[in-house]
Length: 158
Image (tube, rainbow, N blue to C red):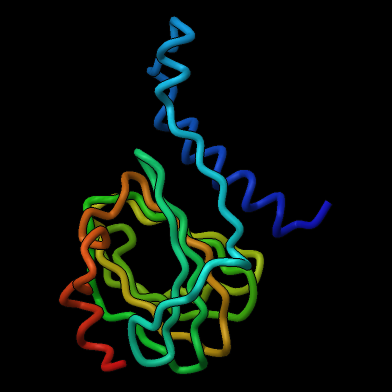
């Protein structure tokens, strides 16, 4: 089985397991009101959200998944959000600034590697080469639901 497929399956499983552990479905009626969604990232249109940054994303009720295509030297500015973020680098390499053990730290994350940011932990990305990044956010990023970009992304100058 393809390693990328395995990592994607693990990320999706973690997303839904963490949010459904306490859920109880007791009746056929409650199942019928659930909304099953089916997506194909290959068929989704990318949106340019900054210089050298494109994304495709979807969300369920409790979490979301995003594929970022980053050109070499693309930069996602320093920011934080009230969502856990699981980042899997599918190809390429990024340099990330974040806070680890109370200290501002730089970490390089390459193809096949994962980094997890707890909620409200600041982070910043630089693409060291052309990169494909799969992110899972729990809960849904409320700041992404409007068509307006968050302030930190407005700084990337499309």
